[in-house]
Amino acid sequence: MLIELKNVSHIYDDGQVTEALRNINLTIREREFIGLVGHTGSGKSTLVQLLNGLIKPSTGTITIDGLNITEGKTSLLGIRRKIGLVFQYPEHQLFEETIYGDVAFGPRNLQLEEEEVEIRVREALELVGLDYEEFKDRSPFNLSGGQQRKVAIAGVLAMKPEVLILDEPSAGLDPQGRQQLINLLEYLYEEKGMTIILVSHRMEEIARLSNRVIVMSEGEIIFDDRPEKVFSEVERIRQLGLDLPEITEILWRLNKKGLQVRTDLFSLTEAVEEISKELRGAEPC
Amino acid sequence: MLRNITIGQYLAGNSVIHNLDPRMKIIITIMMITALFFIDSFLGYALFFLAVIIIVYLSRIPPIRILRGLKPVLFLVMLTLILHVFFTKGGDLIWRWGFISIESEGLYTGFFMVTRILLLVVFTSLLTLTTSPLELTDGIEYLLGPLKRIGVPASELAMMMTIALRFIPTLLEEADKIMKAQMARGADFESGNIVKRARNLIPLLVPLFISAFRRADDLALAMESRCYHGGEGRTRLYELKIGIRDFIALGLSIILSLIFIIF
Ligand SMILES: Nc1ncnc2c1ncn2[C@@H]1O[C@H](COP(=O)(O)OP(=O)(O)OP(=O)(O)O)[C@@H](O)[C@H]1O
Ligand SMILES: [Mg+2]
Image 1 (cartoon, rainbow over the protein chains, first blue to last red):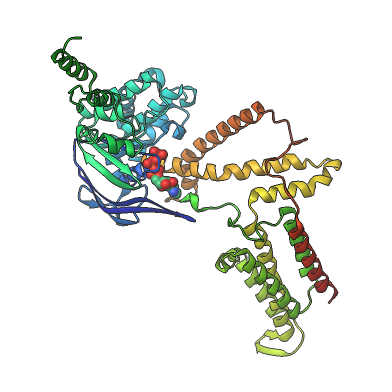
Image 2 (image 1 turned 60 degrees about the vertical axis):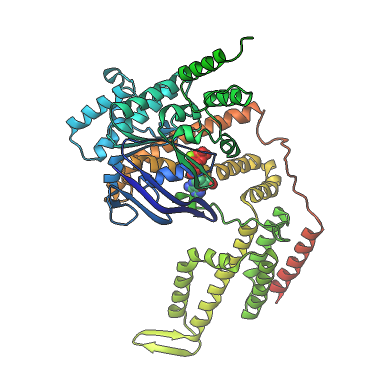
């Protein structure tokens, strides 16, 4: 699976013209975990919607596995099977009477046999940590917000996409829910071999999970590099109105105060090790 | 895709016409429209048209917007024209083919009626183009005020209109989002026969209604927690004020109306 964007621009025109994306060039390869960040209105959601053909670019071309999806004739259903998109607040799109029915909506649209549908629903629900037998006949509307979100994500997973795109999936979740989501994404990436694109405002998530970070601003790509490279551009990141991952922030401040620590670490244990190593080297006080 | 639908056709601006008091604008519009029906010559229409041109000029609305506003009545206009041209008889015979004939009276009445319809639509659209829906609602509330005595719930009606106007764009945006989300799951809103299409709308309508109810709940709670208790004695953020130019506008349109009615 290879997604390629060439000179893609997108303009929303509803009385008032907004240039949401400007001349984007981007190649997404198989088995990448991409963190997509940028301030509010920088064009992240527009970009991900372009990726599975929900909106068409104003200019430029998008090819998916060699198939040009900007041309009129291509089958969008085929693309949507390959590329799953979880919208922001996906729980707002639940509509069926039972959780089973809602998760089955996608697979049924793919014209799968009912047996296969059932297998997929079961698998998807277990993936997000909901017991199949317990939940399948319940109404999605009697669940807590966090559980509803899980059902909605399962609805996309049941389509078995090769690429999973999530638009701010952790917005409004409690710490435990966020942790579960992170674990799920990690699992999907490591064990299921999915390509993942994660849009998020939480830099810790991005730093921990992704192996490539794309920073957007005003509809353009500003950085596109490995996370440690991107987050070493501390001043620029701040200037763009973005946070740093907490750990980077601490290491960077220590560094500024004169402690010679590396600032390109994102896991807590590594950071602790680095700091204590440096402290031991310093003069005892 | 759904965002393109705008409610009303208000074009924000800061012209003399925009800044007139909405109550005055509503009264003037009603008066001028009534006067329009008293006009009985094309000369009168020409005068009316001149007034329209002056207002358009003052309001700085691009004329193309006004022409676009005529599109919905095009069918009605054509129908009126055809009916009159072929079926109103009298005057000189102009053209005949078998039993179909066009006579001068028909031609005259046809164009007369069409001009009236067009001017009517243009003049009302001047009101909606230069007055925001909220101002209009405010204006209507005031003008209905005297009817409160006989039990017309003017304030409540106005509040309902305001809320509806406020939430229609929000709901459209929401519908757009839900539609995209379901399309990402392979939903198809565009093909199939009528029955199938209607069925396919369920994944859009259910979440939309749920969200509308949720919003209504939130709004009710928010209003209640700010002590809203019906329209009685409510004060407003922007008081409507009638100024000298409102009276000038009123004066001018009274004079014009009288001219139309008397001559
Ligand atoms: N459906 C739409 N119609 C018109 N303009 C839109 C639409 N969706 C987005 N925009 C505009 O396009 C620009 C980019 O929006 P987009 O939703 O892609 O930003 P974003 O990076 O996802 O922001 P956020 O972090 O707030 O979700 C914004 O200026 C926005 O106002
Ligand atoms: Mg967004």
